[in-house]
Amino acid sequence: MEIQLWREILTPYDLAVKELIVKFEHLIYEHRSRGLYCPIEQVKGRVKSVASILEKAQKKNVPIDEIENRFVDIAGVRIICQFVEDIQKVVEIIRRRTDMEVIRERDYINHMKSSGYRSYHMIVNYEVQTLEGSRRIKVEIQIRTLAMNFWSTIEHSLQYKYKRNIPDHIREKLMNAANAIIQLDNEMSSVRSEIMDAQISFQTHIKLVSDILNNIQNLYRIANKREVLKIQDEFYRIYELGDIEHLKRFSRELDNIAEGYRAQSVSGDV
Ligand code: 0O2
Image 1 (cartoon, rainbow, N blue to C red):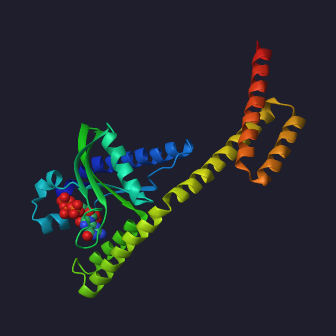
Image 2: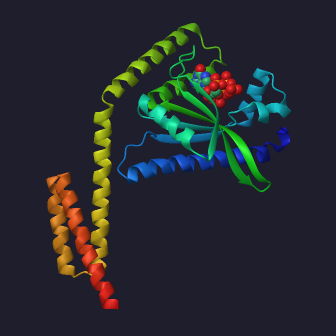
């Protein structure tokens, strides 16, 4: 790695991170738009700063021109899940994908680091297209729960503050906090199905209402205004009842009405 060219060197890493974020966010979108629970809650990513690349190289005694070969986390993507069980689901999704090749996995969930750090790490090869042609980039994907991420963020800041020599009394508190996180994640797992049901029905409700409103809006263009106003009033009435099954029936009836109008307008066109 030539330091004076770091901007150019890091460009394909930046592209890999951006593409992967789009892909994982699209997975969230696909799940939600089908009313399915998504094991991914949030996706973030970053390209390691040149300062931290150099610091790590110095610490690990890696010559500058070997950095790109030896470091697997210049490009990093972090996937945050709600529940510990979701982590394995995400791991399986990544293993099945054909646009990334898993080359290494480290399970710090079942094998917590001595610091108290927990996360699942996967290193993948990911191909990007650049001006110079295609490049295979190594990306480190860290998968962890919201609670693990909270712990790790705090601990990372402390490592920075104490230049990686965190005093023992703070280490001890961090270890206690890491154990509390395990307990918190376990408690949350025990109500996972209830939380998942609540979230799915919330999303279904949002999608249903937006489908109905779209249908009503379209009807304004093709149907008799008095009839649309009647439909709208009926919608408000059913909406206020707060009964999802009632709303689903209304949505199906509305689909039929809209279909009828569309058929009429097509036969009128002929
Ligand atoms: P940063 O600043 O987050 O980028 P390798 O990456 O394989 O050459 P390493 O570093 O031993 O060797 O791999 P490991 O242990 O899998 O760690 C990779 C990354 O995991 C780290 O990158 C951190 O992001 C995270 N990590 C690992 N251990 C800890 C820990 O104890 N606390 C916290 N908060 N994060 C941890 P970097 O480059 O060390 O740091």
